[in-house]
Each structure stands twice: as C-alpha cells, then as structure tokens.
Image 1: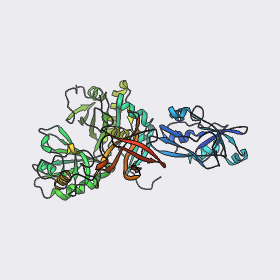
Image 2: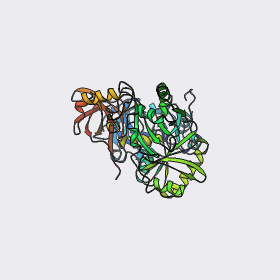
Image 3: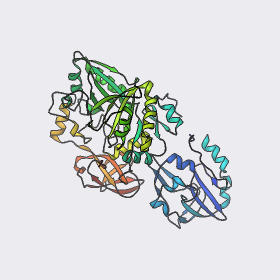
Image 4: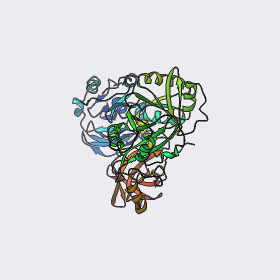
Length: 133
Length: 367
C-alpha cells in the first residue's frame, strides 16, 4: 500500500521496527518517533499522547497513542528503557509529525537498558522493503 | 487487497494518477484524500473544492402518476416544489418509522430526479419497485451508471461554475436546479451540497465526466481549487451537522430521532411511514441523535460509549476533529432525557472518561 505520489524518506543512520517507529541511537540514548510511512498513512495528526519522563518500558510495550483525523494507532517501544524527555511541542503542534517526523516531530528520548536489543531492528533499506510489500 | 471487485467512477484513473488515496467505500473504489483531509476541508470552507460523487445513485421518475408516487414515498412534502427546477431534501421511511435512505428530489421540466446514497442504490430500487405497481401511469429508470456527479463546494463555487457556463448564477437560489453548457458539455446542476457551504452538485454524462472535472479544476485554478476526497466530505458534513446514512440515519433510526424533523411533513397526505412518525411525535421518542463538543484533544469516534455519570447511556455514531471550528466533535445516540443542550456527559476514550457537552446543531454555520 505504498504511496505512489510522494517520495518518502528513510534516513540511513536510523533503525526501524515493523510497528513503524524509528530509533536514532547516540551511545546509550535513543530518540524515537514514527516513520514517514506511518505519518503518511495516518494523514493529518491531531493528537499525540506521550508517557511521563521517568517511566520505564520494555521492548514492544505500548508507550503512547497517535491520532489523526482518519484513525488512531498505538505507539510501541522499539527497545527497553527509561523515558528521559518527551517532545512537549507535540501538544500544541501535532502536525509537525507530518511535516518533519525525523526532526522536529520526534516523540521521546530514552536511556537504553540494553542497546544490543536493537541488533535485530531493520535498516533503512530493510524497512523500505517491508513497507513497499 | 480485497478480492471483491470494486466499482469505479469515470474518474478512478484520474484519482490514482493524481495522488488520490483509494479506499473501498460501500463497494466503490474512491479517493479518501489527495493532499490531506485538513487542507481539503479548509479549501472548501475558505475557497472552493471539487468532489467526485459519481458513485451516488440517480433514478428518474416519469409519467402522469409520478407526482403521486414520489409524494407517497417521501416524508417531505413534494408540493413545496411549486414549479419545475426546484429541489428538496427528504427520506424514504418504512412503516415502522425506520429510514430506508435519505435523498434529494429534483423536480425538473419533464420528470423527477431522485439522488440516493451509493450504498443504498439496490435497496432503494427494490423499495420503490415494491410500491410502484400500486400507482398508475408512472415509470422509473435507474440511470446511476449513465450519470456522473461532481460536487463543487465553497464560497467560490459560484464564481467557478459561472465562468464555465458563461452566465451569472447570482440569482439562483439554494435548492433550485438549472442547466447549461460547459465547453460543449451539457450539464444539469442543483444549488445543493453536503458540506455546509454554498455550492453545486453537477450532473453530467458518464463519458464526459472526466472532461468536466478537468474544466472545473482549470476554471477554479485562480481560486486555488482543491480536488477533495471522501475524508473531507465526511468531516465537512459532520461539522455542518448533516446526518450520514448508516450512522445518524438507518433502518433503526427515524428522521425524527435523527434530529431532522424539519424535513418531515406530517400534515401532508398519506405517505410511507407517516403513522409511525406521528406516533413518535405524539408520544415522544425514546432515543435521539445529539451533537457533542468534547474537551481535550482525543477524538470521539464511532461506537465509543457515552456515559451519564457511571451509567453507559449511548454510543457515538460519527466523530472527528472539527477541523474549522477547532475542537473534537461528534454525533451520538442517547436517550431523549439526555438530549438537552448544555447537558454534561462523558465519552470513554481508551479507558478514560472525557467530559463532553451537548451543543446546538450545527457545529458550523457559514457566515
């Protein structure tokens, strides 16, 4: 169900999971958001429900909800860890998920429990193949 | 992918080639959006938008007995159409008060044109056929496959259509019908719509639908016209307080319960459903569609539960972001006792009770 009209980007330096979150790893810290594919499929994002700083999650646990005019989806942790920051800007400008999902539209920052958990995450090319099929 | 063969309008290829995100709507392969629902919604509120609604059904009723037949089948009063080229919004109602469909009836020079919901074409046809034999001198044909229908909606709709047919539409009243020629294409059009804005629904032969679509987009370019999908059509009609069949109207929901009693004329001669509707009016109805404004940002959606205190009293029938008004809105079905404007209720959204208030219909009224 790939979109034929828009070219969606998947930066090579990120890791991806099949629930459509990306992870930007910097040492033991990670920044997490949703992929361009997810943002495009959801359409106009109206609301992002995020956890509180200090909460801990296991990999694959639900950490939030993303809602668009069209639909609502759960957000899942690509890796275990403790929330160190949330993107406060999403409360007033949820549409930045659509305009800049890998930059301004990030969702949470996490202190990783176990960075090796991400060894089986998808590469940009692997994720691209996954969403095109 | 679904294995069922989806029906397509004459514009299906155009939609696919121009970024339309295609979905299955009532068995039709239709665009839910092109750019974005928000952008398309705002275009219709502030400029002009163009919708392909060729999936809708059209029946033509002719003959000396056509008036009597149509008058019996609808809950509004056909006699309000005092001359040709006039239209009204109405419903087909079952003997128990449930709604078969809602529709627009156009009285034209020689016939009546009935425009029905795509999802109900077969059901409506069977319903009308079941009754037509009791009337003399009346014929009905289903021209749904021969007719394309485009909805041009928004404050600049009049300017766009007027430029295309080469005459002023300033004097054309809402719910009237006219005809014209656009670059050699014969069109008929009602000053009607489903968005809460001024606009036109334009009938054209199937084979000329794509040509007309492109002409309208060209003529609308100076007003930044946007092609719009069914997503924006839904958010626009919701904001304008208009019911959608299968949500706020159904075989279980009468037009009175849906809150559109203004279109039901119990004083007219006998019609299908009249007795049941009279009983509902006299005895009061138990349940009712209400308009809800929700607090916060989470959106109320179809089938979410509505609560009065601890008690579950009803369900959301349609809900979304009110894109122009700027807050979450919904229609819900609740017992009539909770339907008063100002009533505080709550909706369960993902396990939390979100406070909501019953508000006056519509959410949006054009200035």
